[in-house]
Each structure stands twice: as structure tokens, then as C-alpha cells.
Image (cartoon, rainbow, N blue to C red):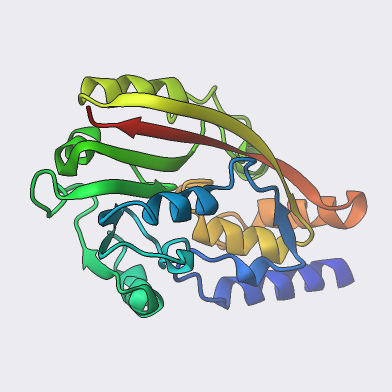
Length: 252
């Protein structure tokens, strides 16, 4: 009874916590995830310091872009999830970025050949034709993306056994980039260990990273959450693995 009551308290706390933006500070001391070895934020900062015009697609709450120490003269960002738009605008004032609200399925609202650099961390999808269109000749696209089967252990803990992942393969990204007329100059892959120390961390993560369990709600999956809580309290932190890849492509 005590374990069940503790689970309900943790679940209720996580269900009420805000998930705006794309920061993960709420999980501090409750969950961990290894960082990719290529240090995406540092790569972005390096590229930004060498261009005049740059665009961040799917900026989230602007967390990565806000840390750029030397932003270019023209710095734009797009975001398709309305709650994040105002968060990003507040966050990115200090680097002089303009945040544009967009339709996630629509074209990029910029002229042809507008940017020397386009970046994107964990895009919902990459419109390679639009990316190539807004890049200037010689321009670069740099993106850290979600790989196939990411956090599969957590997905299966809630949903049960799943078929093999068929989406988000790095090779598919390379094919699509080249079909849009870009030249891929770098491709790296990483498998990153993630741990969850309590069921509240799991609930908050599933509310924020919505593709892990599509359509997730606490009420719908309460039984599975209680089972996972028991597993964590008896066996220790739940371990899953995030899949990431870095792709860099240029417009000839």
C-alpha cells in the first residue's frame, strides 16, 4: 500500500509539472542521459561564428541557440508547437534571434538562398527540399536527429513488444539529402544510456517526448506505470537507450 501511494504521488506531481520548451531541468537528479560524443551545441556555436545569416529549425524553447556566444548578424528560428513559440522568443532575445511560428507541415517562410547555415536539433521531420532551397550555394545544414528505435525499452515497458523500427534511419536521411541536391559531408551515430530513478521521471518524460508512447496519458497507462514503479523500486533505476545521429550536408 505504501509503494502504491508513493507511486500515485510521484505520478500526480509529474502529471502537473509544466513541459513547455525543450529543457530537461525538471529531471535533474531523477533521470540521466549520456551526451553524444560530437557535442552538438559546440558544433553549432563554431559554425554560427563563421556565417552572416543562420536559421534554427524546430528551435523548441531556443535552448541550444541561446548559448551561442557569437551569433551572426541575421539569426532566425522557427517553431511549430505554439506553447514553445513564446518561450523561445523570451529565451532568444539575448542573442537577437527572431522566432517565427510556422506550420510544421508547411514550407519554410523564407526566400531562396537566404542562409549560410541551417541547424536543427531533433527536428520533427526534415524537409530536405526546403532546406536546400533556403541555403545559399556553399551553405551548410547541420542537424542532430533522433535515430531508429530510440528509447525502445521504455516504449515497450508501456506498450508491450514492438515491431522493428523502420523510420528515422540515418541512411534514409542521406538518401533524402542527396535527392534534394545536397552533399553529405559527415554522418555519425550514437547509442546513449538513459536511466530513470522514479516513476515521476518516466511520466514527465513521456509527456514531453511524445513520440516515445504516442497518445500517452496517465489514465490510459496507469496499470503499466504502476508495474514500472514496482520494477524500479525493487530492481533499481530503469535503463533505456536513446539513439542519435549527426548529419552535416552542404549545398554545392
